[in-house]
Image (tube, rainbow over all chains, first blue to last red):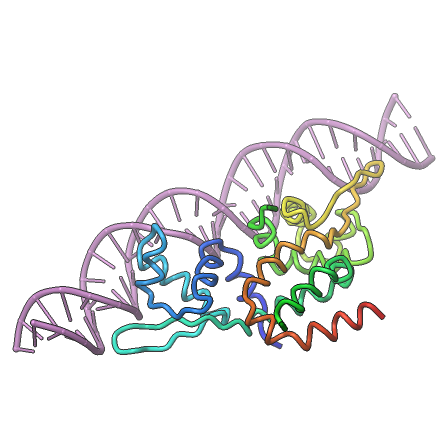
Length: 105
Length: 105
DNA sequence: TTAATAAGATACCTTTTGGTATCATGTCAA
DNA sequence: TTGACATGATACCAAAAGGTATCTTATTAA
């Protein structure tokens, strides 16, 4: 199975979670991501490396730039892990159903 | 909204995720949880504190013992966060549906 | 070709984290 | 009431995490 620890680890940091949301629908270079945070490009690059280690983003070179792309499939192991707690699913059933209905419209 | 950082932080450690699975369906004292790990009771207690800070478990005293109980509702903010990535939901739609159907049987 | 630009690689620092050891406190049972 | 037991609290330690600064490398554009 996919190693889940790097995924949970990547999601543990709020900056990294923000980056993921930021990449939703838009690929970005390191510099572009860094513009949105009050930290150095090097620090942002480290976060991107952690995200990449967890498979949550993929990186492709384009000239001298690196484009970072969200990989939503990588969230699957988190869902798998959560699904162990069936009581959770019972409790969240309604919310889930409406979310799914909304997505399938 | 519920503070989600303590939840993601709590889930980032493999020992803590194991503890949560362990508490699924069974309340346990600190000593009982600690029996299952090769670390001191104090270390396990620290993990339980982190889990409690995230609201993932609740603790109630019973005589001189403390019973730790899983609180599956606390997973909700994680699902909420994941739901932002609608592409993820698209990809996982089938799996989700079967999981839900299985739970509602 | 050369200067500016985007990113990679290190070295270094501080704080947080995961762990142990030790001692104190509260409760149960004989 | 006294000893054993379950837990709480604190101090301490090593490693990991999050960050900066700095230097190097590879492209691009003039």
